[in-house]
Amino acid sequence: MKKLFAFLAVIGILSFGVSNIVRAQEEPLTDSTEAVTDTNQTAETLPVIEEQEEQEEPEVPLRTVIKAKFIEGGATFMGIVLLCLIFGLALAIERIIYLNLATTNTDKLLDRIEDALSEGGIEAAKEVCRNTRGPVASIFYQGLDRSSEGLEMVEKSIISYGSVQMGLLEKNLSWISLFISLAPMLGFMGTVIGMIKAFDDIRQAGNISPQIVAHGIGIALLTTLFGLIVAVVLQVFYNYILSKIDSIVNKMEDSSISLVDILIKFNLKTK
View 1 (spheres, rainbow, N blue to C red):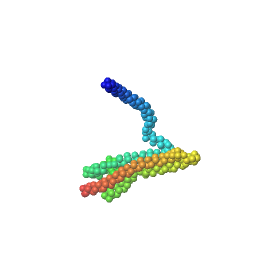
View 2 (view 1 turned 180 degrees about the vertical axis):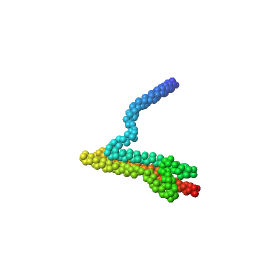
View 3 (view 1 turned 135 degrees about the vertical axis):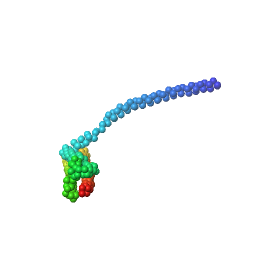
View 4 (view 1 turned 90 degrees about the vertical axis):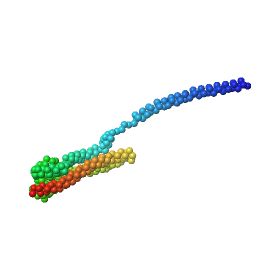
């Protein structure tokens, strides 16, 4: 009996040990199998990812898109809209350069004129105005040139010659305004003509195909889009030019009053 129990105990111990050994051997095998499976899946996924990355199209530059849309919109009206942009920008840049050159430090100029009047009289002050660039110096010169005829004549001369300088400052602004109005109008005209062509294509095709309608309307709206872009760009330059002119005119008016005050002081000193 004791031998039977001992035999059963030995068999149980041996079976328990064998089961542990088998389990220990099966677990690494499973892990390695999973690792091999994962490796195979990763190796299979990598070419798919690489193929997807190769299939992704590169980003098209904005300049290329604008050029393609410009050509797609048609050469007739798009070319006219482009000419409006070119001529409008040329006039705007010319005005900006002219106005920047016409800007004068009026306070410094008045100080120099006052010093010249105290040292050399009217002729010295006129020489300062001749050597200074800008409309303010030209107005001062006209006022100083008629200072011998009295202060009333000086004021009239400043006012009349100030109007002349205002006309020079506002030169070509009407043309820029014309191009601002003309560009979107040409765009709308191109859109109407494009819509008519789109309906003609539908009539010739004999059915209302979404592809025909979308393509025709898309091309028609491109002229309006570019016309509005041209108008917006030119409008920004136009408003900048107007603000620059207003600034120069305000300086002209303020400095003209200061010049009359300086001449009054000079006449009082000479008397």
